[in-house]
Length: 325
Image 1 (spheres, rainbow, N blue to C red):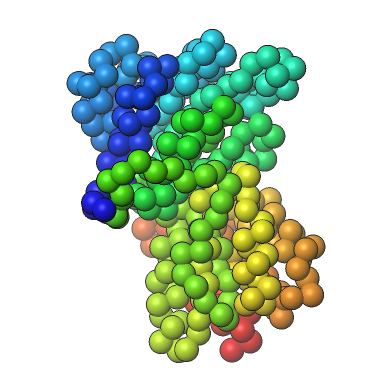
Image 2 (cartoon, rainbow, N blue to C red; image 1 turned 120 degrees about the vertical axis):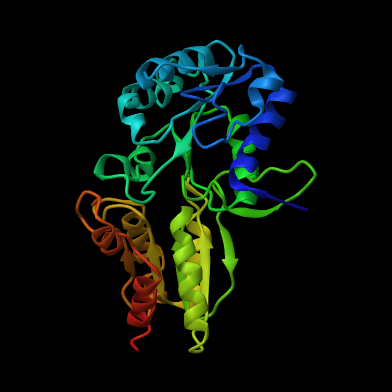
């Protein structure tokens, strides 16, 4: 095992796959000459050249469409958005072409394309640069949506996403690119749609994904001091969603808290809440609690931002609520 940064895990996954398959290329804003806005493609231009590491104009609709068209013609593009906030400019291409093309063509066209980049908040970036869109894209049949929380998962999941014959939305975070973690020296992949139990526990299940899961770990450490045992599930993929792992855990702990960095209406945690009460209602000893951001655009003020974002104290309160203590 070696210890590398999240951004290095992303670069390794892309580079390894590109060495194995010449149909794979990376395209997006600043991915080439600048080595990526967050240095997630550092050194790749030198290795693969400008035909496969392609800088684009600031035109997300344009280069998303080019990527989809080239995928229809046998390539396997990786399209990087500087942030998924900017993907809204290209969302027509993603939803109306990438996601629907296989069905609309009667199976004549696969769209093996990955759209990747950072999502959700990253400090004082303001309301238009702090939005989480996983539930938007997960609401679209034909798309797979992946959100890793650490370098090991990021590399293994991205390799699987690149090899997948369907379009994959692969979401990262500016605040995770410098995170370090152990990654195997040897080749490995992680299947899409399989959650991971990051921490075994007996008293309550906490489900989360992406960078916000760190707050669940902090809360679990604090609660352990009081003798409360938390089981933490990292979804890793929100479409397809691993309902089985969640329900199996709830049947053991009988309590569920869902932590998600998104607005509270119609999100991933809402879907999980419905599914668990429908399939495992008799095992619940308390109502499910979901933790989300405040139902407002993200504030710029650091004082307000702290109140807007979920944190480990919110998780502790939620756990104690479902435990009736």
